[in-house]
Length: 194
Image (cartoon, rainbow, N blue to C red; front, side, top):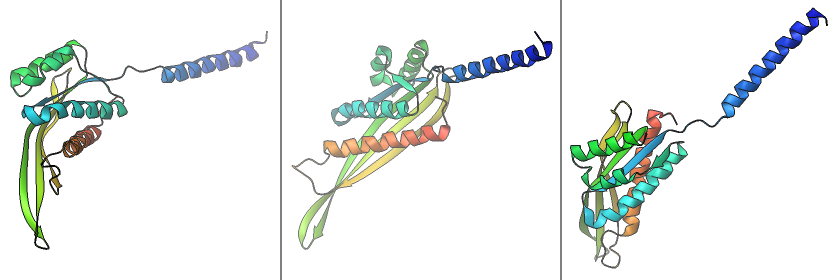
């Protein structure tokens, strides 16, 4: 065998193997980042069922970012305690124990409805101004670092009052979508690795 021919063929084979390994490495499934999401409600009567709605919306938003979400039994147990520092610390400890990369804690703090009366062509009309106050904190679990956190107010004006109900489920669902959108925008601005 000619030595001059064997050397380029061997180099081509090595180069081909390296390209194949690079392609294989790029196609291998990467370990996805994982996050726990806990939504609690201080105003239990009206907002408690909507905490589940918001949790589902946040799970979907994170999934589109490539972050797998889960909710452990420990995290669910701490949902009612999240308003306290001890409850938040316990939830973050349980997230760390199950290997979460991020922890998102959302508290539905206050729901306020104000009814205004106004007149249109001498006919009394009612308008409801609904304000939802929400606090959220996003942590990187490993170092225990706070990545983002805010207290926000979301307002919705509806008119007129339907069936004597000032705050309908559709109004609250709309507010929950606004909350999820705002938190999603914050996560986008952080450029979280998936």
